[in-house]
Amino acid sequence: MSQHDANEWYEFNKETIEALIEDGSDAELPHTIEHHFACSDFDVLEKAAVDAFKAGFEVTDAEELILDDGETVFCFDAIVEKKLDVAVFNADSDKLIAIADKHKVDYDGWGTYFIGEGALERDEIEEDSNYDYDDDDDED
Image 1 (cartoon, rainbow, N blue to C red):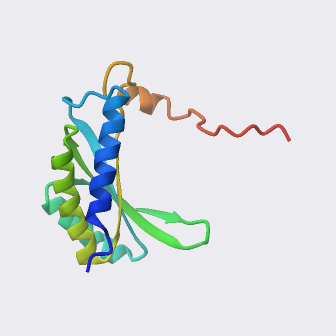
Image 2 (cartoon, rainbow, N blue to C red):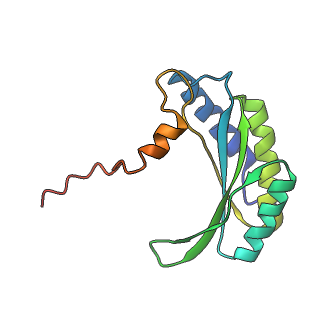
């Protein structure tokens, strides 16, 4: 039995792709898609990363994160360049969910960047990495 509901991911894929296109992202251009995996056991996560690589994804180095509750988790991204096509995303979801289930790691969906007129270029994003995204007003 899968710990991941493929139908929920299919719905996520559909809604997210529709929102990207509605906001003006160019569906005909390839997007860098970052699929997220996490696990508290580094060795187990590493095996999932190997399988993701064998499935055709570029794999990032694992990062260690300390959660708010003090728990340590490790995570990596499986990256691929794809046009915004729901059927293709669903097929990738199937592959990656199978990998997550096989290794009992968490698949945490995917993200991408807006691609199209008015979008920042990747080097502009990296150059502006000092941008403060915190909207809180610290006037206390």
